[in-house]
Amino acid sequence: MKDEVARLGAEDVRDLMVLEKLCFSYHWTQEQFLLGLERNAYRVLGIRRAGVLVAYLAFSIIKDEMEVLNLAVHPDFRRRGLGEKLLRECFRVCIEENVGKSFLDVKISNEPALGLYRKFGYKQIGIRKKYYPDTREDALLFRYDFV
Ligand SMILES: CC(C)(COP(=O)(O)OP(=O)(O)OC[C@H]1O[C@@H](n2cnc3c(N)ncnc32)[C@H](O)[C@@H]1OP(=O)(O)O)[C@@H](O)C(=O)NCCC(=O)NCCS
Image 1 (cartoon, protein in one colour):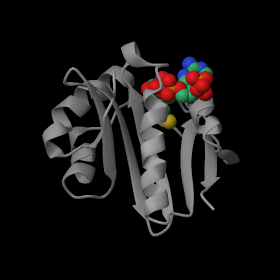
Image 2 (image 1 turned 30 degrees about the horizontal axis):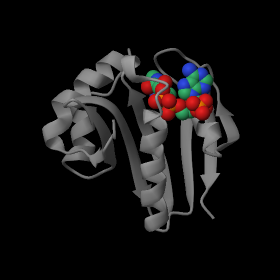
Image 3 (image 1 turned 180 degrees about the horizontal axis):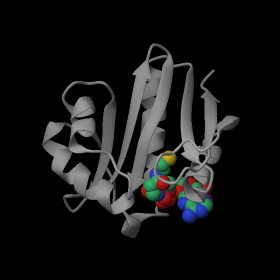
Image 4 (image 1 turned 90 degrees about the vertical axis):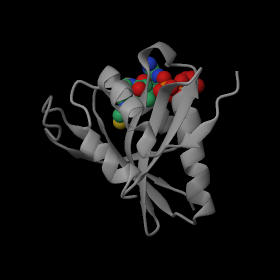
């Protein structure tokens, strides 16, 4: 099946909340999503299967920097290339918009996400001790240079 990556809008907020709650115990609120979807503080890409939202990626572009804000794939649809597909589309947008670099942070124990970001060429540039309020885990800071 061919998965289409689409830009999401305010009409998708309910589906985003369902997916978000499935994927994270400490999750984004509806208000946080609306900041991006209605007020364009960041952008959200999504993939649907049979109408059901199964993956999304939120990212911001400010000047020539892109930050990955959140990425989630439905637990039943992982390891099928959907996360990679979303990040690839985000990279395509960055190249089109002459973005020079990208940053993100990820929990030190999150092997799937670490694997994905390393596969795309992100390099670790730092660590923030006990950064996350939910688990008090360390954050690894990653950077990717487009040029
Ligand atoms: C991280 C996440 C988005 C990956 O999505 P996915 O669609 O399952 O990933 P993909 O199938 O596109 O995999 C792409 C690459 O990521 C890495 N990867 C994905 N799952 C992995 C796992 N369980 N263990 C190790 N590496 C993994 C691999 O490098 C993989 O490439 P490969 O298939 O050639 O080995 C998904 O596991 C998820 O939603 N996790 C919960 C939410 C989360 O932690 N989000 C990240 C916040 S920073």
